[in-house]
Image 1 (cartoon, helix red, strand yellow):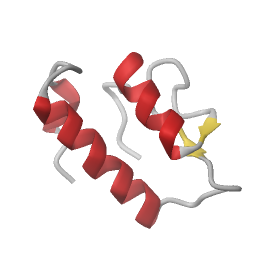
Image 2 (cartoon, one colour):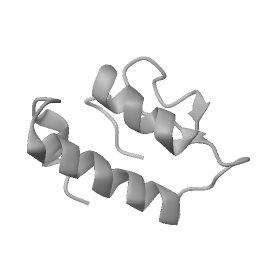
Image 3 (cartoon, one colour):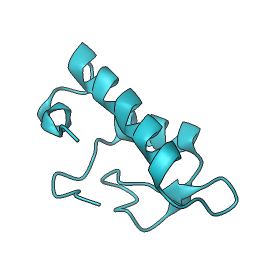
Image 4 (cartoon, one colour):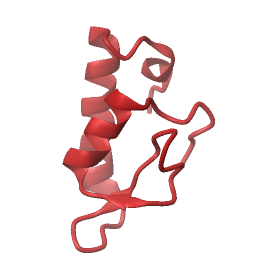
Length: 70
């Protein structure tokens, strides 16, 4: 998966498209627990589960961890 969007400004179209593609990938490939997934934002640090709507919001509010790989 292309990760270049992670370095874009959160208000950019590239970031928005990257988040959308990322969330689609997560929904199709990651293990869900009661409809929640680990959130890779800089606040949750991939340790707190959120539903996809909250993950999306967090990625725009706080940004994604620069070291995120899984």
